[in-house]
Image (tube, rainbow, N blue to C red; front, side, top):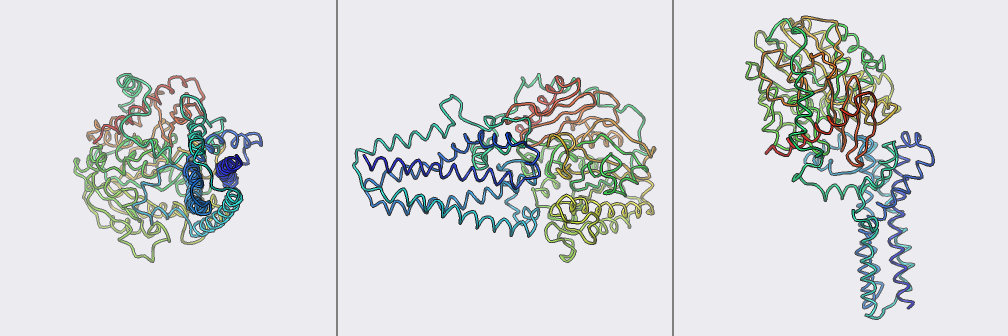
Length: 618
């Protein structure tokens, strides 16, 4: 009887060792993100541990199955042999789980999502993936890995040895009992005896999304997403497909025609598209943001056409590029840009421009292989490229590629020799991406990430300002439309309210150049990146019928809307309402205005229709 008790005590101890690890992991997550944690009251913080316990116990059960089975072999073999096997099993797991723990906190700081399979899509270019991480962060992460692994290995060793030293060989009659004890793990593994196994929504308890995220067990979330990774069905299906399309078309069909005469003085202007990395409206003074970060853009806003209610459709570059060039909504948990078999069937603005007689080119100071961008752009019809390989390594920052001032000088030099040729040139900047390494003074200092973010954008703002002033002196300028917009918004600088509110997705779009018929005006219509190709082609008398998700930005109807996607959620925004929804908990995050009921249906219909389109592309 004593041997049964000792084996049972070992099982319970081992299980709760892992529960203890996950409690520590949640504490580390809360401390690492202290700028967000301090906004929670003490009761909410405690609830993250209480509600998160179900997922902690669930994954502790998975990790305990092998030791629970191994303890049965102590009935026949020397316990010291089994103890050594369990210790090595535990040591390896501790190191691996701690690596995932550190990936999780880093991912959350960068993207605002708990650990899932997103980072797998970047593993083919690990050197570029690491470009978002500073050398200090790598060193600190390695130090944390060594310290945490050492502490928990010692903790597990001590407890495993203490509980196993009293275990002796036993009777084979104990085997059925301990098999049943192992089978009992199915209860915490499933999160209880209810019909539906525990999932992320079971730990969502607060109207503060950060608190819900803190309650999630990071490693459980990762393997849950991994095990449910499938393209066989549409998880965002709320209506019959025909009903969803009718909801969308009823709103969209009245927004396809411009409400005014063309804003251009020609139907065949040269077009320069400058995509500014991570530029959020929160630091653009002409959009009501911080006044001194983008002083050149603020000044230029008075010389062209400023779009004051313009939004990104996603939150990363690999989502922003297809939105801008294909008029295509991002997917909540996937990236179509990384899937050449699907991107080849997308409508492409560059190809439409080629059909109109334009020569196209794409400029970027970094590696075009990142996120499979190169394949996507070549599928778009572009044949002329300049990327990081065209710049001397001495002109690179330590991570991403050539500094923006070097990159834009090459862009400027290549434009200088052009005379009458119609061109469509795209330039994607990069210096304002983490880790915000710039040449020259940091205007706002570099004591915090937010100040480095501001300083990097002030640097790129100066580079863009210099480019525009030079462009004004070139012969091609009088027949050129220059479009400046961002690839996505940003979490920095920190904003009040819901993390995925429209503030995070609002970005600038400014049109400049001699091809403009009207200047110094603002367009207040609500629109987004996916509307750009449709609108531009309408102005150029091109074929825009393939851009089936887009609208005309110059339609002044009060029915204009913007729809954006974040990890497993969406926001739909109009002048009369806002509706933000989370698919994980199937709950509304934010709603206001008199149109929330309609936006609930519209947002869900767009999410369903867009994802179905993604699934159907082969």
